[in-house]
Length: 260
Image: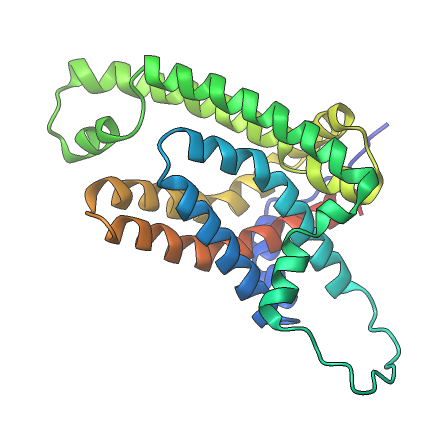
């Protein structure tokens, strides 16, 4: 029995386009949430090694808050109520409340933290392997610049392929794990298994969906290593600010298709 819906490859583009309908419902809130997250991400990026790991650990919990926001924005509008003289909350306070809103979901926050911990462990193993195989960073820039010969870049490309395969497997396992815990109350391991199966079922659509974001991520990595401070972190912030809302919105749209 199929547990997920299977969609055509063209749906990958419609997920990106469909995210716009979410963003325009409350654009100011989305921009504020994205700004807060990117400030956290850039700040942690400045802390060698540990900062990235902390970001990996907290990102699934923050993602849950954003997905819950998207779900609420999709809900039919409630009947207007007389709020009297009660002031509307500042949009930045709303953004903080929504971004960290998963901590108020007592039933879901622990399973999501389990997913965060498992993801962190997998990322550490992959990073150690990447360091041993000398993948990424300055080596990638040297390969693209043509300053090293085939005797160097061929083994480097093979090592890069191995690391990319492991990253893709991890990405498939966690892609839908958070929304499955949040919306369907799935246990962490079951959510990761169903996420992996859903990604396999819709591999073509997800590949098309991921291409623009993979290009943006690669460009950010290359510019980060080539630019001087503070331009390197400014590029990370700007690219993240532009692409992240569309990625999360597209993730929510794809979840609707796969499990709706």
